[in-house]
Each structure stands twice: as structure tokens, then as C-alpha cells.
Image (cartoon, rainbow, N blue to C red):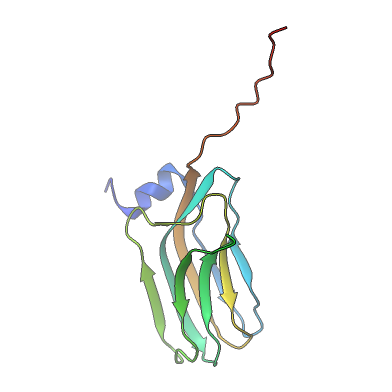
Amino acid sequence: MIGDAGWYRNVYQDISGELTVAAATDDTTLVTARGSIHTIFIQQIIFYVTTDAAQSMAFTDSAGTPVQVAEIPASPGDNTRWNFEYGEEGLPLTEGTNFLMNVSAAGLAGRLKWYGYQKQTGIGHLGLANTAN
């Protein structure tokens, strides 16, 4: 169906992925922006907790003042599913920043899946040399 979340991932660069998060997994860059004029849009994050722990997990961008995308609180419970949805167009991160998973400390484990895309949102330099003399 035209207009569904998959349409955006087909038209723009699909950045969807998945990660097995072990108890020892540290802060991780999940997606790297293509450049300073590209924006990552997050459509959905799903995390299934297999090992509970007194640690929290946050999903942000890499800006100096990061955009907070989602947070899973400490001690979320074994065998729980955390689902964050941001619609077909998705939640835009700060232009030119990466998509990160930040953990408060080691311990929490599970399966992570995210859906999204990135597209050029800024105007780049054309790189044309000045030929006028």
C-alpha cells in the first residue's frame, strides 16, 4: 500500500536492523548518518527482554543535546516486549547525527529490532570550481 511505513523505506535509504543485546553489551551506534545533510527517521523500535537487570536503556541521536527517541526503565521484567511506534513518516533525529543505544550499565539482555530510513534533508555544496578569471 502506497503511504505505509514500508513505502518510506523503499523510496529512501532503509536503515532498519536488529541486534542481539548481550548482558555485556555497551553503548552502541546502531546507524551512522550518511553525512551532515542527511536525517535519520525512526519509525519503530521493538525490544524483547530476555534477561532482566537493574539497568535502563535509552535510544537517542548523537547531538550535543540529544533527541530522546525512547527509554526502557531499569528492571523492565523478564520476557517483556517494549514497542515504540512513531508513525509512517517516523521521528526525525537531528540532521547529520547517528542513532545510538545507550545503556546505563551492563546487565540487560534481549533482542532489539528497529525500522526507519534516512534521506537528504539539507542542501549540499555542489563542488563547482570558479572558472571565471
